[in-house]
Length: 128
Image 1 (spheres, rainbow, N blue to C red):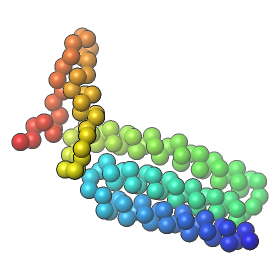
Image 2: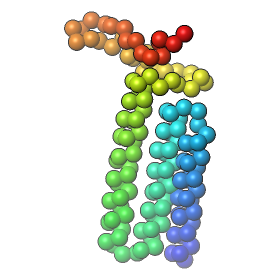
Image 3: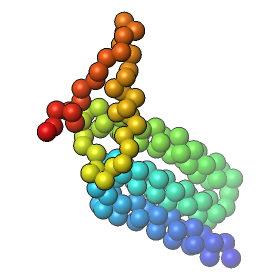
Image 4: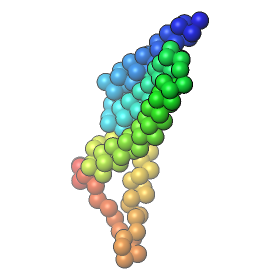
């Protein structure tokens, strides 16, 4: 019975990993690609790790798998945020279908060091 449950978790994990890879190929810009890769691959790896923990069965293996899962759950959102922030400030263009850019609105009225409001020009503003 444990083998069947393990196989189900592994298949679900592999399916999510595949969906994450397809999302990276099919999404239109770096921000949506990043979202597809981080969310789907994290969920896929979580299912694969649960399957591995069930298959191994001993407590030491469970602790190792739980440690790997915790590390991935902590580092994936942080790295995704850093990549998105760096891409945004490097001037990577948003997808044409993007409806709302909250970061641009916030950065246009960002206070300067002297307390005065200043206008921030980005690479997107320089385009015609």
